[in-house]
Length: 101
Image (cartoon, rainbow, N blue to C red):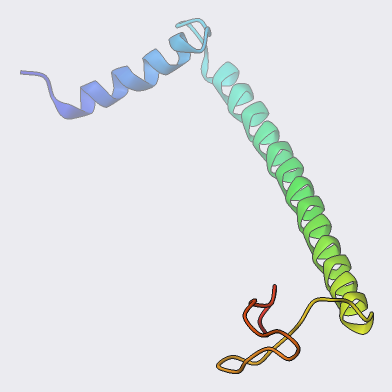
């Protein structure tokens, strides 16, 4: 019967083989590999942060532009009718307005 600890050790060893690294890697080579992987992960986090920040900025600007457009539409004498809930719209008898406030 195999022990659970031996199975985990074999998984770690096979991970290097699955990535294409030789089985005979020394401790120094593995240390360098871990260092490079760590640098790559930090770079990936930086790129992810920059991308998310750009998307957040685009979203905020889009929403603020949309709000400005809505304010201009409200100030403009448009055919859109606004009404309070549970009240009949002004000027319309049977048609419902496009927007409710």
